[in-house]
Image 1 (cartoon, rainbow, N blue to C red):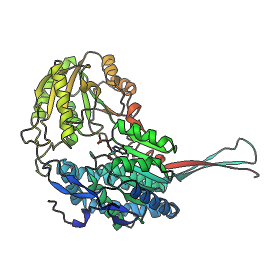
Image 2: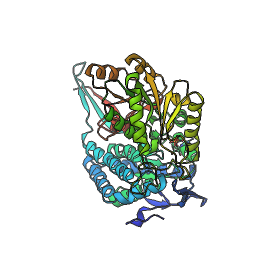
Image 3: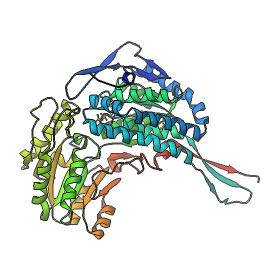
Image 4: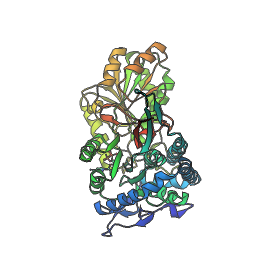
Length: 484
Ligand code: ADP
């Protein structure tokens, strides 16, 4: 069982209108530790009615919240941030227990998650408008920024803390109120955030968390006209569905969807740095992030040497329960994830790929999988098209820069991309040619609260983090004053 310093952070009820609540019909659903299969507890199985109440609460809380000065909202967000840091170990323990990632990575996610609250607490005070030189004498033209209103946030299980703060930080800073629907696999991180929001003094109704049926809750969040904005992180498939559902009420939407990140290693790359970057990008969170490398494209001149060095590094990754202090690779989230990884490897091998390391379920059983490197991978294989979302590094071979760019862009996705080269001309050419929202150049880890995170094509709409992230939660209003 969970051993927390502050046991009250482990909440098994939803947080609506400043009150801890059960489902109307009393139903609940279990939450399991993916490493052990152990049931950690339950959460309410809520549906449309409870979601409607949460939306009403957010709507009722909105006028007072938006009327606060930016400095007042910033102060409350800062308190929330401080509490997250003060409870970093407990929040990380909850996260590892429900999600599986190594405890050190979970501690890192809490810092990363908290950084969005800190950043947007600061940005709250910098929501500037504009004045526009008048086109006609006797007029004054002004642009002001105002909060969009009630925001719905639907978040995934791979970053149970940070995917919430990245949405809620800018929303609250802008003066919006929020209803969050966390992933059913990882609700406790969301509920712990609610507990800390309450302690920070964030008023009732401003931040609400509803757990339960994704379809029923998502249906209400997207259909209810009081919700003015949906921010979703998850699969492209569900993103498309939610976007369609939002069409009826013309909601503003932000979507952070799937990726198919290329990681290009050119002949002139620093190979040790490329291996370190590939490990960080590919195997973080056991390969379960939307910016994880999905395809390694390696130039022919360094292909064998890179494959050898990467295989060596991958074979040393320690697979263990997230609470084992040496753990580097935790379990996959569920059996379906294991099945997909296995299917991708089987498909590749049946079409001529070679397994250099790993390739099968881990001897520990459950949802643990061996970190895997595949060589001789080609574009006809499933790993070339689909996001694997697991610990598999497939190595494709290319000859020329043009070929690498063509292969990298040959996907409907466009979230993160990476490449390694020491040639300054090539760096600028390739960075410009990659059809992606983000490019890591001689870097495998690029996420930070200060930079705009987001994708193009089927990877989504909008940006999170940075000075741009708050715009997603603001409407601009043009004021035209005449008779002057
Ligand atoms: P993942 O592959 O990361 O699990 P999903 O897109 O399936 O991504 O889920 C991301 C989030 O979307 C989760 O919180 C999930 O519960 C929610 N979700 C899934 N299906 C729906 C739906 N039909 N309507 C609303 N939310 C949904």
